[in-house]
Length: 299
Ligand code: HEM
Image 1: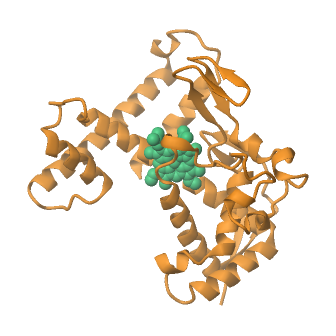
Image 2: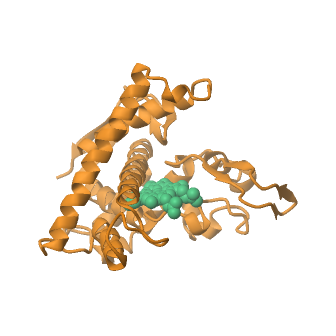
Image 3: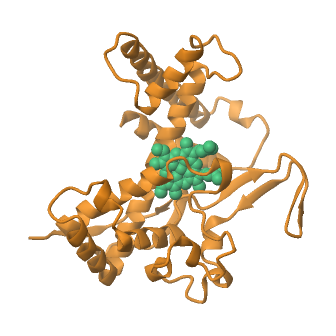
């Protein structure tokens, strides 16, 4: 939890710095904020190093299994040689710590953004909230949602996809062409920086129809490939696409379905009158003034 808190603070400072006029070398000037950024990074790295060292020694003494992500990364390295004595295919301990940072950041904020917007949207669209609840009560019933039940949640999947379309946690992808290429009629020279504006694409009326701005989960009734007006267009990519597509895509959808099912089974919810709709980005898309939702326990 502490790591997530520190990362959140660091994220705010980085976003602030990115919004400022770019002066080469300014980030090395020891201003109060620059010093705090460095300190946060040092703290996060040191906490992760303790976790990695502890895990490494527990694996060595047989006190823990190796089948979680960190265990697998360490196992991969141990099979090759010891850490810090690397060949080309190995990772250093620093690499592993950086991977951990990436997973904390990429795995936490994104799914929580998806769940937050889903609750907001379902608090507004009571009809879809009720349809989702009825599906959960029929499919999941009394038990906790398991893999079998999750795979039968069609309405919930449609709702999550429609939320990912209207409120994608990652609103744009930034890529650099490493060699010149052509996409359709477009010539892309090597070294060009490209922005793929996911959120704008997701609301384009040419791709989604005149109702592109409306919440209509039924557009996903026949699956993702039929949701957009022209199925040949790559219009829906909240998790990116290609070799660098999101590694946590399936995991996050399962996580969101489990959490949403458990909430729908136990509570009905409405927007509080204090809620003000203002999507904005701090790395991920978030409601600027919070998500004030009133929950009522169901009998
Ligand atoms: C709703 C939830 C999520 C969304 C919308 C999301 C979105 C994305 C996007 C757009 C990318 C960039 C893909 C590209 O450049 O083409 C990405 C990459 C990545 N995501 Fe996710 N993500 C989510 C959840 C997760 C979770 C739960 C994890 C980990 C448990 C995760 C781990 C990663 C990692 C490690 C990468 C980098 C992959 C690479 O560069 O090879 N993400 N994600």
